[in-house]
Image 1 (tube, rainbow, N blue to C red):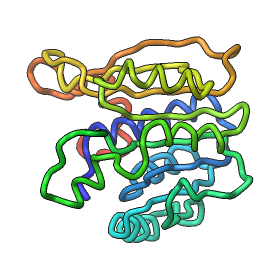
Image 2 (cartoon, rainbow, N blue to C red; image 1 turned 180 degrees about the vertical axis):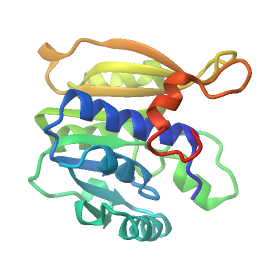
Image 3 (cartoon, rainbow, N blue to C red; image 1 turned 90 degrees about the vertical axis):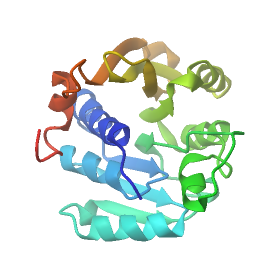
Length: 224
């Protein structure tokens, strides 16, 4: 499976947010772990954390299992091959992270693996947020990476689930481009949430990595 730049940006941002704002995060759930990159980035930055990474697709699960086993963080990451909707544990997590399939009710490609990765036919966004609410500790935080075009939709669904946004970071490919993604941090307790709105560009107008992007990714990319 291909690891995208925006997924790496999201992983670095989430790991940094929890490191700086909540250093006592111990239990983490990664929903739709894919190749395991988010869990690995999180574990690298947050040495006290233990992560449950759940992935439904068999091929992605096998790749994640291999990647995690080869890492220095294997003892702190448990990779689970299952449907998160069947999660029955009474465990509550300090942080829940997800880079879910992007598209619902849109034209699919002829590539079945691409469909699984990008189309949410098995776990709708509203279902995902229900899972997050059921498994998040009262004082916990959740993090999502979504297409920018779902900006208004996600706010409505969060309101239904009594979940609240504490920060949104709008992502541009470059300073010349429109927003393509949004990174969301949220929580369950409305009275402690103040929504902050930020933006980040991956590249400048000369297609060179921006300083704030480089600062987030320098501990993960060898050539930054």
